[in-house]
Length: 153
Image: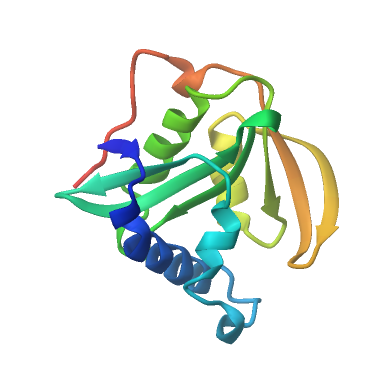
Protein backbone atom coordinates (compact mmCIF):
# COMPACT_ATOMS: atom_id res chain seq x y z
CA UNK A 1 0.00 0.00 0.00
CA UNK A 2 1.19 3.54 -0.77
CA UNK A 3 -0.02 6.40 1.39
CA UNK A 4 0.90 9.89 2.54
CA UNK A 5 3.58 9.95 5.20
CA UNK A 6 2.58 10.62 8.79
CA UNK A 7 4.63 12.00 11.69
CA UNK A 8 4.76 8.52 13.23
CA UNK A 9 6.65 7.29 10.13
CA UNK A 10 9.65 9.54 10.77
CA UNK A 11 11.86 7.06 12.71
CA UNK A 12 11.33 4.29 10.13
CA UNK A 13 11.85 6.63 7.15
CA UNK A 14 15.05 8.01 8.66
CA UNK A 15 16.35 4.46 9.07
CA UNK A 16 15.37 3.44 5.52
CA UNK A 17 17.15 6.50 4.12
CA UNK A 18 20.29 5.81 6.13
CA UNK A 19 20.48 2.05 5.52
CA UNK A 20 19.63 2.33 1.83
CA UNK A 21 22.30 4.97 1.19
CA UNK A 22 24.91 2.96 3.07
CA UNK A 23 24.04 -0.14 1.01
CA UNK A 24 23.74 1.64 -2.35
CA UNK A 25 26.55 4.22 -2.24
CA UNK A 26 29.70 2.28 -1.23
CA UNK A 27 31.89 5.02 -2.76
CA UNK A 28 30.67 7.51 -0.14
CA UNK A 29 31.92 7.69 3.44
CA UNK A 30 29.18 5.91 5.42
CA UNK A 31 30.38 7.44 8.69
CA UNK A 32 29.19 10.86 7.50
CA UNK A 33 25.63 9.59 6.92
CA UNK A 34 23.21 10.32 9.77
CA UNK A 35 19.59 9.50 10.57
CA UNK A 36 18.75 13.22 10.52
CA UNK A 37 19.85 13.51 6.87
CA UNK A 38 16.33 12.40 5.93
CA UNK A 39 14.87 15.58 7.45
CA UNK A 40 17.02 17.87 5.30
CA UNK A 41 16.61 15.74 2.16
CA UNK A 42 12.80 15.88 2.29
CA UNK A 43 12.22 19.34 3.79
CA UNK A 44 9.11 20.98 2.30
CA UNK A 45 8.47 18.02 -0.01
CA UNK A 46 5.46 15.71 -0.19
CA UNK A 47 6.42 12.20 0.91
CA UNK A 48 4.63 8.98 0.02
CA UNK A 49 5.31 5.80 1.98
CA UNK A 50 5.08 2.20 0.87
CA UNK A 51 4.13 -0.11 3.68
CA UNK A 52 3.85 -3.83 4.07
CA UNK A 53 2.00 -5.31 7.02
CA UNK A 54 1.81 -1.86 8.60
CA UNK A 55 5.55 -1.16 8.39
CA UNK A 56 7.17 1.42 6.08
CA UNK A 57 9.46 -0.26 3.54
CA UNK A 58 10.18 2.66 1.21
CA UNK A 59 9.40 6.25 0.34
CA UNK A 60 9.44 8.79 -2.46
CA UNK A 61 9.55 12.57 -2.19
CA UNK A 62 9.40 15.28 -4.83
CA UNK A 63 9.61 19.01 -5.42
CA UNK A 64 6.24 19.93 -7.01
CA UNK A 65 7.14 23.27 -8.64
CA UNK A 66 9.64 21.51 -10.91
CA UNK A 67 8.05 18.02 -11.20
CA UNK A 68 11.34 16.84 -9.72
CA UNK A 69 11.54 13.42 -8.07
CA UNK A 70 14.02 14.08 -5.30
CA UNK A 71 14.22 10.84 -3.31
CA UNK A 72 13.25 7.24 -4.02
CA UNK A 73 14.52 4.80 -1.41
CA UNK A 74 13.54 1.24 -0.52
CA UNK A 75 14.64 -0.63 2.59
CA UNK A 76 17.52 -2.98 1.68
CA UNK A 77 15.45 -6.02 2.68
CA UNK A 78 12.62 -5.02 0.34
CA UNK A 79 14.47 -4.33 -2.93
CA UNK A 80 13.49 -6.08 -6.17
CA UNK A 81 9.91 -6.64 -5.01
CA UNK A 82 8.18 -3.86 -6.93
CA UNK A 83 8.27 -1.33 -4.08
CA UNK A 84 10.29 1.28 -5.97
CA UNK A 85 8.10 0.96 -9.04
CA UNK A 86 4.94 1.30 -6.98
CA UNK A 87 6.28 4.43 -5.27
CA UNK A 88 7.54 5.96 -8.50
CA UNK A 89 4.23 5.35 -10.25
CA UNK A 90 2.30 6.88 -7.35
CA UNK A 91 4.54 9.95 -7.48
CA UNK A 92 4.31 10.27 -11.27
CA UNK A 93 0.52 10.08 -11.04
CA UNK A 94 0.63 13.24 -8.90
CA UNK A 95 3.09 15.39 -10.85
CA UNK A 96 3.21 16.93 -14.31
CA UNK A 97 5.44 16.33 -17.29
CA UNK A 98 8.18 16.41 -18.01
CA UNK A 99 9.22 14.80 -14.73
CA UNK A 100 12.90 14.89 -13.90
CA UNK A 101 15.36 13.43 -11.43
CA UNK A 102 19.10 13.24 -10.85
CA UNK A 103 20.89 9.91 -10.45
CA UNK A 104 24.54 9.50 -9.56
CA UNK A 105 26.48 8.15 -12.52
CA UNK A 106 28.08 5.50 -10.29
CA UNK A 107 24.66 4.12 -9.36
CA UNK A 108 24.54 1.70 -12.29
CA UNK A 109 21.65 -0.34 -10.87
CA UNK A 110 19.42 2.72 -10.46
CA UNK A 111 20.30 4.02 -13.93
CA UNK A 112 19.33 0.67 -15.47
CA UNK A 113 16.09 0.68 -13.48
CA UNK A 114 15.13 4.18 -14.62
CA UNK A 115 15.96 3.37 -18.25
CA UNK A 116 13.70 0.31 -18.06
CA UNK A 117 10.92 2.56 -16.70
CA UNK A 118 11.15 4.92 -19.69
CA UNK A 119 13.42 7.66 -18.32
CA UNK A 120 16.03 9.15 -20.66
CA UNK A 121 19.18 11.15 -20.09
CA UNK A 122 18.85 14.87 -20.86
CA UNK A 123 21.95 16.20 -19.13
CA UNK A 124 24.89 15.69 -16.78
CA UNK A 125 26.36 17.63 -13.92
CA UNK A 126 28.49 17.62 -10.78
CA UNK A 127 27.34 17.75 -7.17
CA UNK A 128 28.96 17.23 -3.76
CA UNK A 129 28.34 13.49 -4.23
CA UNK A 130 30.01 13.39 -7.66
CA UNK A 131 28.83 13.21 -11.27
CA UNK A 132 25.12 12.76 -11.89
CA UNK A 133 22.86 12.24 -14.86
CA UNK A 134 19.71 14.32 -15.27
CA UNK A 135 16.90 12.02 -16.37
CA UNK A 136 13.52 12.94 -17.81
CA UNK A 137 10.22 11.10 -18.09
CA UNK A 138 7.56 12.25 -20.56
CA UNK A 139 5.30 9.21 -20.70
CA UNK A 140 2.36 7.70 -18.92
CA UNK A 141 2.66 5.95 -15.59
CA UNK A 142 3.61 2.32 -16.14
CA UNK A 143 2.53 2.59 -19.75
CA UNK A 144 -0.93 1.62 -18.47
CA UNK A 145 -2.39 4.31 -16.18
CA UNK A 146 -5.04 1.99 -14.73
CA UNK A 147 -2.58 -0.78 -13.87
CA UNK A 148 -0.64 0.02 -10.65
CA UNK A 149 2.48 -1.86 -9.58
CA UNK A 150 2.15 -4.40 -6.81
CA UNK A 151 4.49 -5.50 -4.05
CA UNK A 152 5.71 -9.05 -4.52
CA UNK A 153 5.98 -10.83 -1.20
